[in-house]
Length: 400
Ligand code: 3PG
Ligand code: MG
Image (cartoon, rainbow, N blue to C red; front, side, top):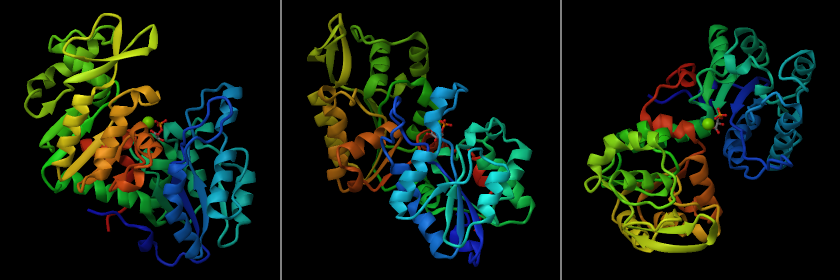
């Protein structure tokens, strides 16, 4: 059932709308500089529509995972994000105060005129945020007449006050709640993908750990006609099947996680048939192996035969869903596989959906993001939604 959207909020003229966005953007670890603003750009349609409707906006998000170390946490203040949002909206965006809630914030919000927008400080700077604290939720809820959830990337977090406690309090107070355009689009596309996809459906998986994605892989296997597995996790499967993976590190618990899936290999699951492996002590020495990998070498990418096989599969599919890079793509020398998969998807006539932070970054880096049907802003949220996990955050928003 689709959720109420901002069009269902009624007349917003002069109303204050609290918008939970996911501006948890990747940052440079030493300078705090924003490395990719895709998530900020993703929320612009909703923010612009609300401003156009005559509302004022109180936007809020978390940024990173504050540790309590003051020097490190200083990089996680919302200032840079507010500044970037201001540039993208061509409009002044100020931070409401130096704490998330409090008299300074209440006064700044009260002083807003229609068309104004302020940002709250990083909601995780207040320890009550991740405890879904009732008092904290009430203090935030008091700042708005209506609530909008446009934070798809965080929708799976069930203990966050800004995602669950705030809309719950607003519901209790009879204030309207809706999903934003980004969340509505993500839900529609992923639901369509899992509900009635065009067949044949192909899944492409990569990334490091089988154990992290085991529920996702099972959910995918229930939907797809075929699943290609590359990336670091492929070596776990290969090792389980008796292939010597050389110096590629595969731990016991990963082997255990892969075990129940081994029966699918050769049937629904295709593993790499060749791989690029580099010398552990000299990454510039890399060569392609078929079968066993020589001692001292570790797998870093899929090989050319595998890429050709994967590209062929992509070409003959009607829907392709991809999560997880198939190689160590951050290193240009090991990025051929990941780039090749992105290229094949971009060139195909299939419905193409990409999910997961790293995968989305890779696709964008190669300039193929606009050639995909959809690139999700969700990492963990994308995986959890595909798995069919219920989201507490969304239960606070009424169905249409
Ligand atoms: C994410 O990037 O996964 C979301 O922004 C949620 O952040 P978290 O993983 O720190 O809860
Ligand atoms: Mg996460």
